[in-house]
Image 1 (tube, rainbow, N blue to C red):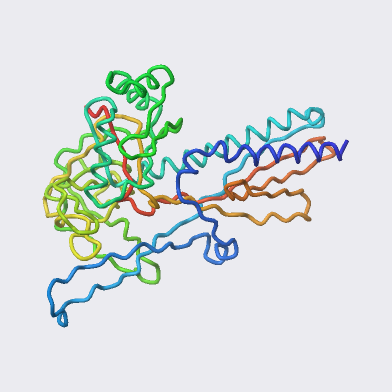
Image 2 (image 1 turned 60 degrees about the vertical axis):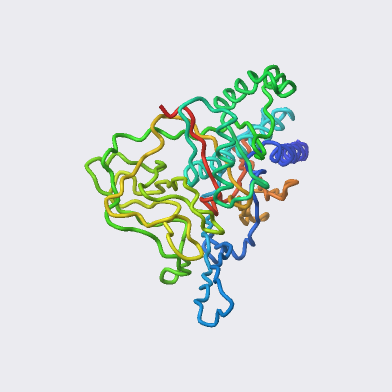
Length: 407
């Protein structure tokens, strides 16, 4: 019986591994890496990924006296979250049924994959620097506006993704279904809830939902003095996280701000990331932490000069903040290529110290672990599935959210 149970547990793990990739939707749409476990242990489960360099242009025939572009090695911190686990027990009676164990493994793969997709979706939703809003239901025009915002900032649409929550996806279906001149796609939208790729986005429907709650009463919130960010390689002994900056605000209602809020700042437009042309579109920002206080951490950082310039001007003292999430709504996320990363890790579970351990890699190379142990006095086998990963927005200026129904 023991050998049969072991075989059934192996089959359960095989089903878990096989179903894992199929249940990961969003996580298959981002870049993935698998840092060396030894390196991660020595670095405290934190590693830094380099960002691209940007350059200044110097005009003229004789450039002997020109200022040279200062090469700044920008790096993004990536930190593993605590491992996600599924733990359950199978007693000696339940283990008589092979299907019982197989279905347990399938349920575990579905739940852990859903947790990864949920956390990844949430990280993008809370960090995305581009914010597109509309007063009406989500439509094709909103996705086209998102693409226009990306293009105006020099972000190639190649490899860009758009994930829509179920309810806004439904509204896009209705929008397409009403377009009589798009005969084939209108019919597909009407009878099969099928939406084509929109405005060069690879378009997906997701059952994940990240809700952005409406901002409270924040009238009169302003910039507390002139503020901007200077790009540096290091802050003390640690690489600088140039994705964000400390930002001081004032006003009677600052206690009503919260993490995740989206806003623009009077007098600040976004620029093309490469040629630095004014896009004539307001730059949008997110509160990363410090919501409800006068000292916020916002992203992206306000960089008004130099090769990494992303805005037309610094935040002037007294400049008004206009908050964009004025109604509760689940977000729809989009991003450009290489803007988001999912980094998997592997824990070292010993195979000869009590519990039995099985390890495998999925087709996408994700390392998975199952451990199990039988208590003969209780006649119970305890099973644990474990996964380790980090979900990181590498470039918030290349990620965005669409917020419809903002009335």
